[in-house]
Length: 106
Length: 107
Image (cartoon, rainbow over all chains, first blue to last red; front, side, top):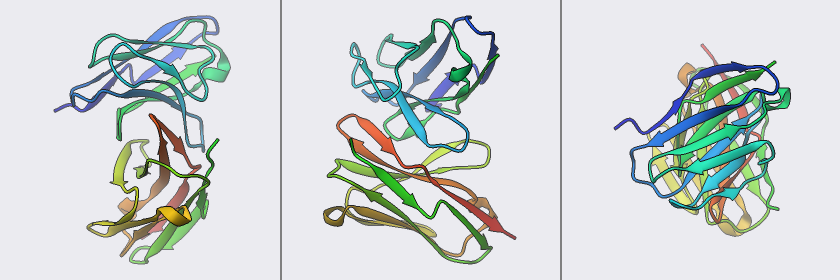
């Protein structure tokens, strides 16, 4: 089992560009989550999906959108990237985390 | 909202030492988890522990839900134990995270 996979692992964007972070899980879990982690800090919840077809805002949703494509996949989209969105992004399902995407916005 | 506080924020120990990390939370929770984030950024779930005591090798955890705290014990520390230890409490579908304890084990 691959667990939770994320792509890409690294990304550099210019201010105003858009991109989608992809996440997939093969553990058949209903709930999936997107977090961001800024240097020296804990994780903050961006959005979560309690089950297929539902999404809800977390602590820091502004500037992001999500899609729960099916039970396996949960994507995070930045429509117009800003330097404040420079962070490491983790996808998770229950207590299992993907390897993270390190995003830099210049 | 619920507050999660971890102490100490930093801990430096020699290899072989024991340590206790604490997590306090301000309200009733559905569950509590401990995570280890290694120096490469990988997050590993150590324990689901809403109450009681669990052990896994050199690590054990105790949660006293009525007093709203949890403790993570690391015995006979190894350099591979270095990293940041987070506790997170589950409220409905969300995990609320503490700021972490940064542990450095010196050889």
